[in-house]
Each structure stands twice: as structure tokens, then as C-alpha cells.
Length: 587
Image (cartoon, rainbow, N blue to C red; front, side):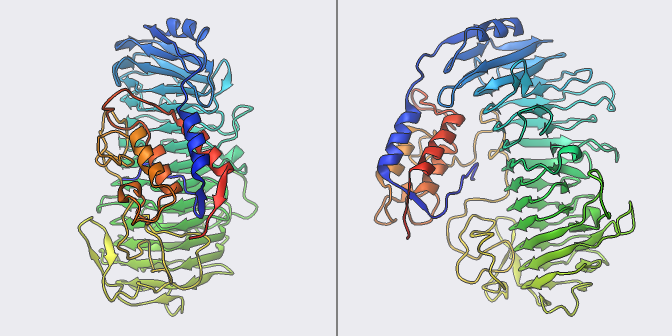
């Protein structure tokens, strides 16, 4: 299953440009020294000498009460790395903490198990060199790092600075007040966002009993909510994450929430503060569990497309819940919903309303109905046990309804609206466990309006063609590249081997130079006659999408020979170079 895609649609890059970029990315470091270290003090000493391309290797074993300051300056092609002798071979516990501070630093393969702090965050992207930039925490686990009292508040991971990445980590059983991962945008001078949280596995977070502050991911806070931070939160799995109503709490602007899976989790993806969020291609699978929810909408200029929501309990009044607003709202209150597009989503079997139009109206000073909302081409079928209508609540001025199909319960607010067709969508449960339109479905080629500027593919990663189908699924025979995430798609690669190794084109169990050569060898060719194995995107053409699938999963798996590694920052540099040298080509 797809781990990470950087989309560059419509761009085809010249082979010479790619070859130069790849050769530069594969170039070895100017110098590379390994430092063996056995405690936090030795790490600090080694960092006084370590430079770009160097690696600090932690001796395997238990590290107790170690406060690590990983502070230094690598480069884009040659970061400084901190890792154990073997992946997962170092266990930090007691009061151990980690600070990452500087530029182009990578922490890879650690374990934090059974420790606690008295209120200090466990891992922070800041320290003596300020907030970290261009740095990464990957392949790391954190389990049961809890205080004796559940009311003791600290965060497990605090991100400061810019252009950092937290990926392929595993978080289990955080049972105290405090957020699992916070991006503290605005808390340090250089903390302006563009951070990425992806491919992580969050498991078994118990309920906070209704107490605030138990989010799993929070981006910024109300004080900084009017800033635009451009964070990307994608390809994460949340399984039985029950801390509070906000599993994800968005509190800044221009963030993307894409291709995440929420499985049997008691809460919602909440756009709490801030504007201009993109919520795209997420799977909310409640399996009938109590208090499971979907998407909660507050603020302006949001786009909510291609999401699949099924078997939810409708926490917060509906699978998609649009909030009423407060006049002249303070930053920590409820801004009126304005200029929001909710299109091409599929909602199936919810024990509540499917779309709530005015959540909270009349409470907490909320008297303003949402304005200028577009509900378009959503497929809603409800056979769950509920007396609630499909659409519930009042709409404000300037709403657009078109192309929606709703069936199974009374339409409520949507009754008599020409933008809602009350017809059976003819969907069936298929082998992959998802409800999809069948032959003769009115959803097929049934979309109204033109939303091609917002979406060009569907929840499966398949291209939308002609008149778009209603709902999140475009009926297609093309290769499915996305779907609900499972164990093996997320978390540390050493802990959860991939179920399907995207980018492994030669089938040797490792994504490396031979896979890259397969793509380059068929570059710019149609398939056929080009090599089908060079087209993992399945779009019939060997180009930038296929290169991204290889580079996005580079170094995954078990190397059959010496590990030729491109660090993540180098991958990003390669893609930037590709963009700079791109040649437009129209198919």
C-alpha cells in the first residue's frame, strides 16, 4: 500500500535532469565517521566533533535516566544520524528524554518504554541550537511512557522549528493528560511549520473521561491559529484511539490531512481553529463502536473531499459535523463556518445524522449558521439503527447543493432539495471490505458541477475520468494505490515489515538502486511497450509518479547487499531539483 506520494501532475521531467539529480543524491558524504556511544554524556561529546554524514551508534541495551542532547548541523545530502547498533536495540526508560536541535539531523530506530517524566516532554525538536529544522524522527517506538497520576501533563513528542518529519513510529498506551504529538508552531522564533507527520501507528489510547487535553495530534494552539503553517499529516493509522473528542486537533491554517485511517476510535478529526484545511482521502471505520466519529468543521475555506466514513456512532451529531459559530469570536471560541466545500465523500451506516448542519447551535454563544457551504456529489446510504435524518439542522445563506445521493432514512433538511436525489445508490460490500457502486448505480457518471480543480483522483488513487462518479469511489479497473491502512503499512519498518513493499519493482524485498534503474530505463515511455514493472502507479506511463513511489519508500525492506541509502532529506532535495528542471509534456 502506498506509504507516501508527492504528486506532480502534468509534469514530465527530462531523463538527463533526473540522472544528474539522482547521481548527486547518491554521492557519498565528504567524510563519514561512526562514533560509538554508550550514554548521553558521550553523545554530547561526540557531537562536538561530528559533522555532515557522520553517525552516532548507540550501544544496544537499556539506557536508564539518560537526557540526550542531539545537537548539531548536517546537510541536506549528508545529515547526522543517531541510531542504535540494531534497529530497536536501545531501550530508553526511567526519566530519559531526547532533544533534537540544529539542522539536518536524523534519529532512527530507538525505543522509549515504561519511563516517565515529572512534566517535561519526552522528545522535543529543540535544544541548545534552538528549534530543529529539516530533521527527522523515524522507526522509533514509545510505549507506556506514563506518570503515576493520569492528571500529570506532558507531551510525548513536541515539534518545534520547520520542515521536520515524524514518520514510521509506533505509539501505544498513552494514558495520561497530554498530547501524543504537538507541533508547537509559533513557540520559538523559527517555528513556522511545514512539518510532516506520516506513516505512524497510534494504538490503544484510553479515554480521558471527557477531560480536555488528551488529543493524539495537535497542530499549533488557539493563540497562533490565524497563521498558515502548511503541515502535512498523512498515511497514519489510529486504532482504538479514545483519548478525547479531538483525535486530531487542527489549530492553524493551510494544513493537509490526507490518507489517514481511523479505526474503532472514539473521536473526530477536528478543524478546531484556523482556516484553509484540506481533508482528503481519509478512512473513518467505526465498526459500530461507541462514540466513533468523523470530521468536525469550524472556520473558513476548508475543502473536504474523497473521504470514506462507515459504521460510525456519529459522535458530535453526525459523521460530518458543521459547527455553528460565535459572533465576533475570540481565538479560543467558535468561528463561523464560511466558504467550505464538502464534495465526493461516501458515508455509510451511521447511528446518527450523516451530515449535521448546525452543531452546537444555541450553546457556548453559538448563534451563527454556516454560510456559503457547498455540498456536492456526496453518496450517503444509511441502514443503521437511528431515528435521525440524513441531513439535520439549519443552513445559513449562500449554500450550494448539487449531485448528492441520499438513501435509507428521511432526508431531513435535504427533503425537496433538487441537489439531493433520494434514490438507492446500489452499493455493495466488496472483498476489500468497502461499500462500492455496482453496475447500474446512479452514482456512476452521476456527478454534477465541475470539481476537477479540487480532485483528479478518488479514494483509491484511481483517476477520475469524464463526468465524475458520486461519492469517494470512481468505478475503475485501474490499479488501486491507496486504501485503509493496516499493520505493515505504518510504524517502524523493523517492527512491522511491510505487507506490500511499494517501490520494490524487482521483487528482492528492498527498495534501492536496482528499482530506480528500472524506472529510469523505461523513462518517458507508455506501457506497453515500456516495461510494466516500471509503472507502479498504474497510469500507463513511466514518469514522475513512478519515481516518487520509489524515492518515497527508499531504503525500505532488507537490503540483499550493502545498503545504498538516500536519507529522507536527500530525497526531498532530489524532488526539488526535478521540479526545478521539469519539462512540460502533454499526454
